[in-house]
Length: 330
Ligand code: PMP
Image (cartoon, rainbow, N blue to C red; front, top):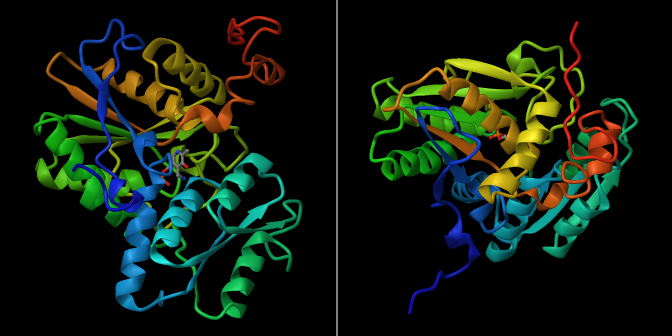
């Protein structure tokens, strides 16, 4: 019989698929690593598993303990699945701007979700940073993974995503492109690919316009899961050869094209990463193999990126049509 012992054993080993239509006119091969094939639907299952197993080994997480993390998204889902399978409780702390759909997903997996006001300063006692710290102090056996500073976040990619890509491409990968959020994916995967290729593989970061990684001041943008207004320690500044900034509009229009033209219903950070991958691939020749990582599925964004009215409200589509608005010419 061919079966997995539990969903935890199905984390990683995600497929690579060639992009055939959005790549028209390019000479290089562009392959996408589709992370929504993970059990929790995103790349974050990888870090959840490794952070929890490392904490079990170090004794930071004891049998029956409680995982407390300020997260509303993909990391929470990964932690919730691994935690329930291993007998831990989860308490997630989210700001109240997070959609009820996302909160309901976490609750569906059996996690407790504490919702805090978004419109308060980080130092306010009710801010979600302070509430999560207080819960860690007050709940006996509590442990906070902290994906922004936990070295097991990039390590999970060094030991899984990187080796998978090297094997899947038979060592022919010449460039790796990833969006940067905590920086774990690009730092761990990029470092592995540089090590195994003696520095030959180029590592390219994709970042929302406005975020610090591409020189922005941290001004707001709409694409979710990537970009920061501070420098997390999970991000290794020495790995990326180049960071390409991508606008919300280009990210979302490409996200919609991936669904229509490649059969890939993926999230906005995927569209962003593909825009950067295509920009980089345009400079390359026929022997180049560019791999772009697609972190999650588009199901969580149906009422935003895949909703024409929402796109028109932000000026990305002409109202009542599916035509992109024309860029302003100055
Ligand atoms: N895209 C999405 C949707 C994410 O949730 C994340 C994780 N924050 C990323 C991209 C970026 O990954 P990383 O944190 O490893 O840089």
